[in-house]
Length: 618
Image 1 (cartoon, rainbow, N blue to C red):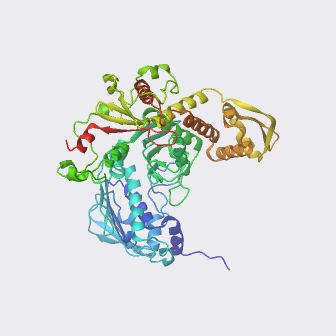
Image 2 (spheres, rainbow, N blue to C red):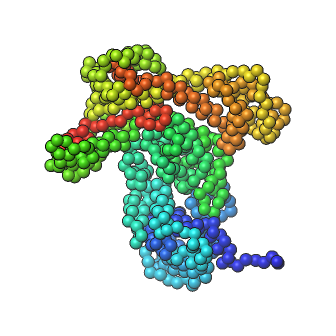
Image 3 (cartoon, rainbow, N blue to C red):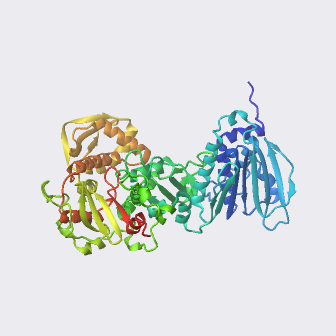
């Protein structure tokens, strides 16, 4: 078959297969154009999940008539000129509008600021209509109807109206987080209206609009910089996590991206604080020189490539772990709310004089429902998410022990701790008052109470102590009687050799054994008998992908976590008042003490205002 030039319409339809995957892709491209035009308010309307209608209106700069006629032509853009090294806008390829017009019915109305009137142009399945005058306010309105009517085969692959509507909502939320100074309204016959008013430069307020107040209460701020790359944002405490990664938002120079390098670094940062199968909630904003990042990887512009991926990965892991060390020792506030919910009337057993609900049916608190919001007399100094003070108290803390060597025998009687000093209630975790079921410590704070899982809490303390001991010096190694030779491609050996010194500090002794092999001479003693060849190949794969080998350190930390679990104070052990208070004081000064090694919370806090509401006293 002879080679021939494809028609412009067919070229645009092929391009649309990459740029326009579903109605949500249309919304993404049009909203990004509005933001590039300087809009401060964007309204999105949809119908039938965007299949029959997507309308995006903005108050941006608008376009003159001649610019509007060019905007629907392939590879016409006002955002770049001769280079891809300094892209400061969300769009730049000049493909979105012609691609949309080739597969749908496109209508654009625009009026530039200062013009007496606006203009309108239509494109139906690739057929361009004439440029006509249009009466409208300054800004741009883009209306897309009957998406994929020109390519019916593609239309069959769309999901239900509800699913497509949900995808559009997710796209708008992701973009809105990155631009708190812009107001967004999402409405239509297929949805409940969402209104996100502008919050100026207060990004946390915008995040709260989208992720809810719970995230604001359980967030840790991040602000770090390394070699010209700056990382800011907010990440949740470890016990505030989800079953999927849908609440992880990443932005590079304001652009929402789905980058596996960044998501992997986020997962690694929480490696020993969140259980497997759970995901942290985070909003990460990366500011980097445009010349150091390639955003022209895919027409959808969701993938990026970094010139120095190791630098970025190290920055993310280091910044988040530093933040967790600084503030991550608190538990999520949702634990206290769950406890309050467990006390709600109507779910308890019947009593001799009626159910709990009947006993309290006259209470205003129960008639109106419990909102979980503390009363107005709440004081920030006793907030469950304040930074913990570096105060030490009690013989347990002063001894510096990493275990409870003075635990009373099971025959001892230490259920009530009434002899605790009243001043101890001023500590963040308060003063121990009782031990329930020989596992839960009840402590009184200035404005509430704290319930601590003694096994989970001490497990974390022992684990952090073991980690500190392991990483403060070289990990003990065991020499192999016969070195194990691992055959590798020569390029993998070349990648591995620069990391031998760091691996030696972790107890793994390696040396080059010819051009295509390495010899394992020592292995970490704490790991016992291991598959040395498998470990080396895993490390090589990590270095090839991420530029660093973290798998060995993670294995050692896992062993330390297992040792801590078996070496900590067990459930069913009775503690004296001094031991309980000593445990509380050490928790206040230990990083990550808000959750155990498996990611479960070690304590929950209940405010006095919450308790009063349970009894209808507020």
